[in-house]
Image 1: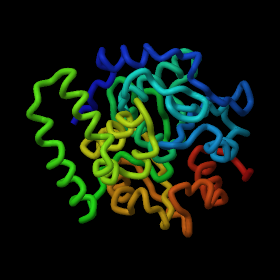
Image 2 (image 1 turned 45 degrees about the horizontal axis):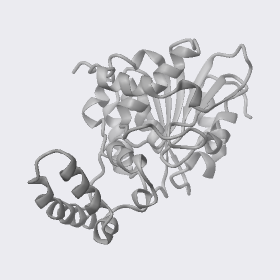
Image 3 (image 1 turned 180 degrees about the vertical axis):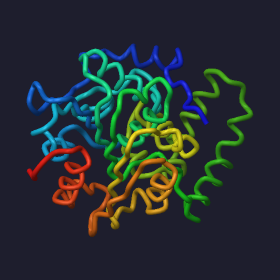
Image 4 (image 1 turned 180 degrees about the horizontal axis):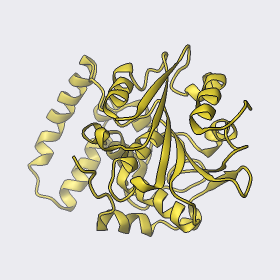
Length: 280
């Protein structure tokens, strides 16, 4: 199956509307070193990705971004999904004249964005290798509790779906989202959010790349903590099985932030995969 085009006009327009000068980035490593991109996960930041960047910054010029709505970068003006984030990342790389293809490191949702880009006709050429720590992007097997909440949410929303599209329906759905019962159905991440980032979260966590993993043509190293409760072994096994050139390193005793919990293993595996000599 060929990789689909990603940069559709609406996506490009939304990404281009974001002021590039407001996209905060931390750049580290020798100025003459080849570039490497680092993307954090949902609710994280470039500051939390610093240890991962530092593990390879002796051999690469590392560009670690604060994605819109995270760290020091403001939210987008309207709800975004993974394609908009991917288009903005590509815009940053192009604006800074970075040489492609380059390696990239992504944690959690940052891994989801990288998987989407690597599986897309328009964006795959940016990357030579991917290092993914507990990457999102593969649909989880829903638990009985999740299935129960989804069924109740569908029932609650059904009467509102009968309203014609427009202001009245939008206001009614906004009222529903603010009710106590609806918020009890939401995740802690969703309930902690405000404004445009709530809908951005919904559009992001529901975005999966399962059906496109076989189109990824670059080597991929997946690292996953065996104590991770956010991304399951099933999800990472699916990634490694479906991507043509992928391998898995299990981080014993680590959770979702495996690169922090087991920096020794993360650094050793990542440096070897990227061809860096020695240890940090």
